[in-house]
Length: 291
Ligand SMILES: C[S@@+](CC[C@H](N)C(=O)[O-])C[C@H]1O[C@@H](n2cnc3c(N)ncnc32)[C@H](O)[C@@H]1O
Image 1: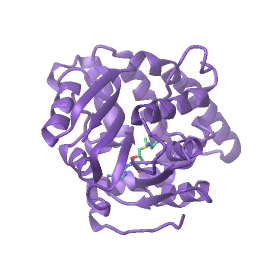
Image 2 (image 1 turned 30 degrees about the horizontal axis):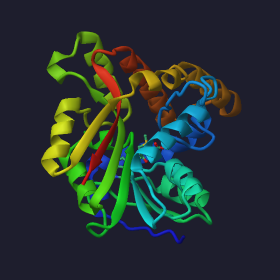
Image 3 (image 1 turned 90 degrees about the vertical axis):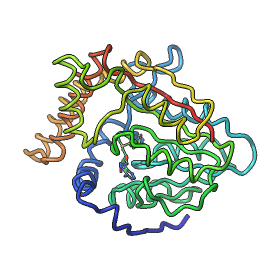
Image 4 (image 1 turned 90 degrees about the horizontal axis):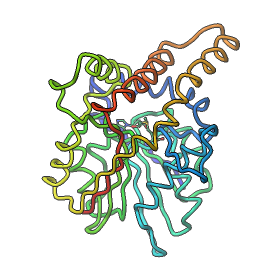
């Protein structure tokens, strides 16, 4: 599929520039996290995934998302809103021959390199803002968003755009971390982890899970199902310290230095682990919603 580049001025507004820069500079580091360039945490399934093999858990997360889309044998249009390097798209395309997959990202690097990985497959990555895409209304059978909507603070406008592009009956699957409490109710320790996490991963904010459910319903989604999968995700979160140390040693050995963005990202991963330990305040969820 041919790659198309659409420049949106709102994509490059001030608040996004830092984020674009972050992903342009730090994305290649994710190869250390995942050979398939999965930029998310994994899903542990006893007997199916190996706790020591990170990529088996990361790809299982993709499979869990795809399972919930209930893709049948008819032609199916999927959009990945915040697609990274297109790992979920590639996984989907390898499983469903009736699929056309579109992905959007704000990063030029991800668009270019992600499209190279999609070469010869029925998928394309566009550089667009998921809050205001160029897609026609009612044009997709399903939409996925894995660890991406947090960058816009789980805002209602992001949900509204997903709702707009989905066909009636289409499903949206969101995988992300959410708060279990309102920010003022967080303990000192979890508030510290929350602030650091948002800062280092360039997240506007993380929404409280019940508030988010309400937003989805207010926009018009029905059959909203919220699954707390924190314990399934924990084994891959515990890979973080080992991955950080391994990555730093490799980089320092090879280049004797670490990019500012890489360091920022590594600290973010550490705060993700720290947040994960505050289980009363943070949770990791798969949300299924139908238009
Ligand atoms: C942590 S990565 C996850 C990537 C991918 N979903 C995965 O799991 O491998 C977050 C992604 O969200 C994208 N993103 C963040 N804000 C965005 C926006 N406003 N519009 C489009 N993409 C955005 C980033 O470019 C990046 O690709």
